[in-house]
Amino acid sequence: QVQLVESGGGLVQAGGSLRLSCAASGTFFSINNMGWYRQAPGKQRELVATFTSIGTTIYADSVKGRFAISRNNAKNTVYLQMNTLKPEDTAVYYCNADWRGSGGNFKSWGQGTQVTVSS
Image (cartoon, rainbow, N blue to C red; front, side):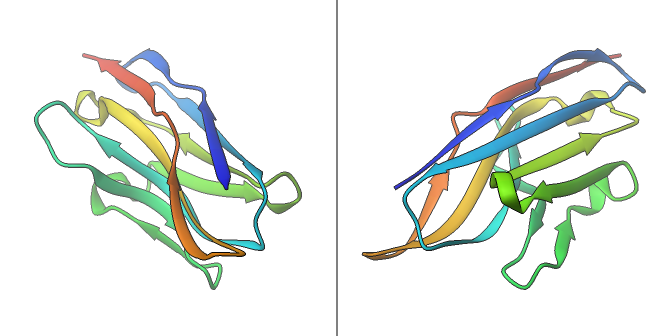
C-alpha cells in the first residue's frame, strides 16, 4: 500500500509562486508514473504534470512554461513548482502515483491540497 501526503498549498496573489510537495510511503516494489492533477469547482479532475514510467514528463498545455515538476527518487517525493500563477489555476491539487506491489499494479491518490490564486 502506498500513501501520498501533499503539502505546500495556500493562498497567493496572481503572478505569485507556490511549491507543492508529495511524499510517498508504504510497501511497494516500484513507483511508475507519479505526478499532479487538479480539480476546480464544477470541473473534472485534469492532469497538470507527471513523470512517466520511462522518466519523461507530460504537462498540460495550460501550465507549460509556468509549472515545473521535479522529483527526489531517494525520498520518493515529487514536487510541483508553480510560477506566474493565474486565478484559473485555483483548484484542489492531488498527487497521484501508479505503483507496483505484491498483488499487482495499483493507483493511489493524495488527500489534496487547496491552491487559491486571487486576482
